[in-house]
Length: 265
Image (cartoon, rainbow, N blue to C red):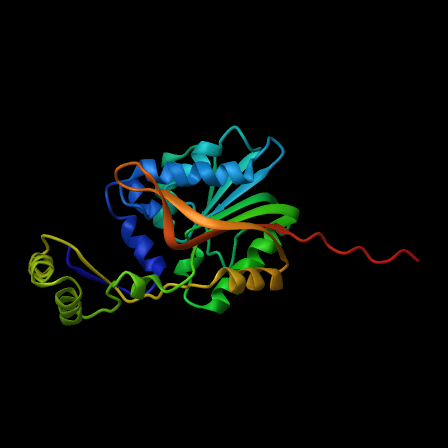
């Protein structure tokens, strides 16, 4: 494949859906164990029951929905592209897979009782988009529904980890040289050369990543009618299988505020 330039994360996940391994669209590459570990923690927090309708916004490869089958009355996943919908629908039978964005969920108001939205908000393009997504989750959730929103960085991860953000090949090579030294530069130059003749893929991603401190994120959620229940550092598995704490990412549990009844006359 050639050099691929991406300006938003919908395009990024559409690209991942072209790769041969379905687990690519989980956002964790082929590390299935890591995906299952994160989803097991989400399900432990949500604890779906046979009366629940469980919604997974940005359901990736459908792993969480597969793990939740039989625990909830209905499992629904939302993905941003038709390409992902086709793949996940075939891989995870017995669940409903819909195409939509977190900011415009294709569901009726008050139709779900448990919501997972993990590693999605950080890929939205602005604070306004995040607020719109929170309002949409609140709209489709029933009163007192439990909502898990995960992997929100407290600071800019691209800067923290020295990631390149841009669409210039020259800029990418300069960044590799400055950030990681001559050996990384030579490896990057080889990837550019192979990509230019279709023998490799160089992904240049200029999309930004949303971040917010816990205090700011909780205030945003409460503005959208969500009640803060708990928050904690995101935990994950590294490649050796050890449990590690994310240096920047937090996960949150909210409930939907019940409507206030008018005073009796």
